[in-house]
Length: 173
Image (tube, rainbow, N blue to C red; front, side):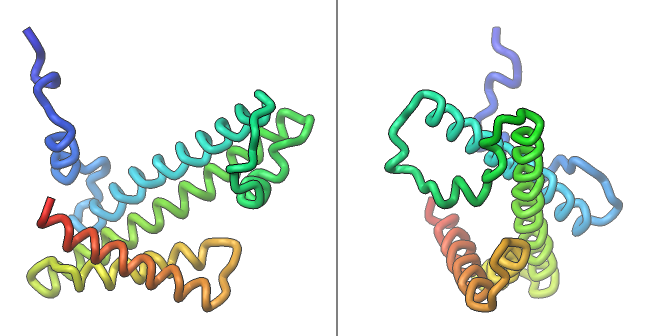
């Protein structure tokens, strides 16, 4: 006989994420921003560590790296290739922390702004998502290495386009 957890689908699991805050900070907006930040920060850190593990594995096996973006690899983990294991670990931790902050910032800003706009306007639509995506994209661009104004505008437009498209497509699927 299966347990209750065996009967849950991925859709049920994702839908229940909004009902169970990780932290109760006393206000729905704060709870939403903190939850989004923590969950996305974990994803960002895991992404950074798994990317480094992949590159180390490919290089250790003498694999062909012609398909890999070596410039991005070197810029993210330039000091992780040294002989000193401590320097490598420090580089991975630093990169994982940076990505965790960036992913958490994007998710927290986006979630907080969409919640605030939904409360202010009375409904959620693609306009809320576009505004929140643009602001979150600009925030991520400002935390990156290249804070040039063209870079910020590019990220803001990309964030607005992706988030509004996701909102419009969510009604279809």
